[in-house]
Image 1 (cartoon, rainbow, N blue to C red):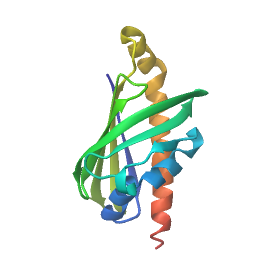
Image 2: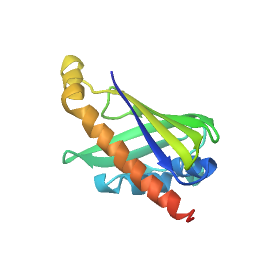
Image 3: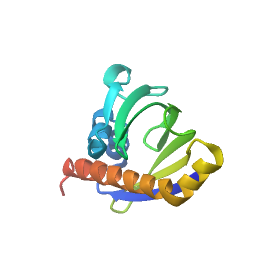
Length: 153
């Protein structure tokens, strides 16, 4: 399994950063570069404990669909989401939020594995890990910019 951790300081209160990270519409905007859309939005239009969402996006010129479930919501500290169907053999995204002198420290821990056993492990090691790190860093930059724009100081 591949694993990495990314941290981003966001100049906004923790409860606002937490809420932004759980906002389905903001999530789609953070992934606009990849043409992500929600095929099935979460019930009520917001991520809650056990919410399921079906998305499609284009990576490497190939359209992908995936379904994920949100769980372990502990406002404003943490939540997780897991792919239950999609291109990865397994995919877990843990989100954590801590108070920081400049606002909020948002920490993303991603654990994943590509399909196809040894070939997938090689792909993860040679390419996919860096690709996913860049994708999550881009996502976090958009989330930070939008959240900070709501809190000009």
